[in-house]
Image (cartoon, rainbow, N blue to C red; front, side, top):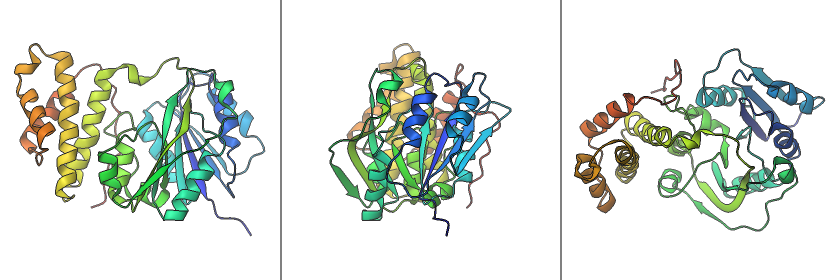
Length: 316
């Protein structure tokens, strides 16, 4: 009898040959899982990334490797992987993230114990060579459970793919918002709309080796993507709880204000600063006219990476 797939690992890949041997060693060595599957979605790498994946996964069951012939970006590629996932839960990772060997096992046990749809841990930038992190374990930690997943995400920090999420929840949420190039903000927000319960661990479940280049260096890209992640939730789910709509609007305004400070003369005399101050004191319900004005400014921003031809259609 074939065992049910417990965890589907979904990795997006683009030119990460330097990291992949260590990333794959830790990924394929995850302990305590009955029948994991491994889904690799390559975004048209020009290095040896796909060949390295094929080499390390040779002879391993439940492996899917998709070598795309065009480059579309992180969000659509991770959605491509989510669509293929058959496991009870999905754990996503970038191809330069290294998982402690027991981290998935611990997260899965917590999810099942509390019947939580989402489990989140922390990440740490180690500055170490990838090979030095291949055999790390999680260590001691504490955690908290909250039934209200969206409120928890909106009042905490949930980024860098430190997540285990129920597959049916991710698919219902349509994964990452493809209007947002970097998926870190949009996935937890969209999943939390549908999730029943969330666990936040204080353990480092993602180990980041020394970095040789990533998108986080473009601060305007981060401002844009943070705004768009919140904009998408506000406009796609207008019937969310009042308090959560206010929190989303505060986040959107905060991202816009950071952009204004970087790009405009005399930013403290702008309307953006006045709106920002108001949201810091008592977060108001979204002002849709100002929300659309902010979006127009971000849409006009040059030097921002955007998904080409996003495939986005929410089921209403």
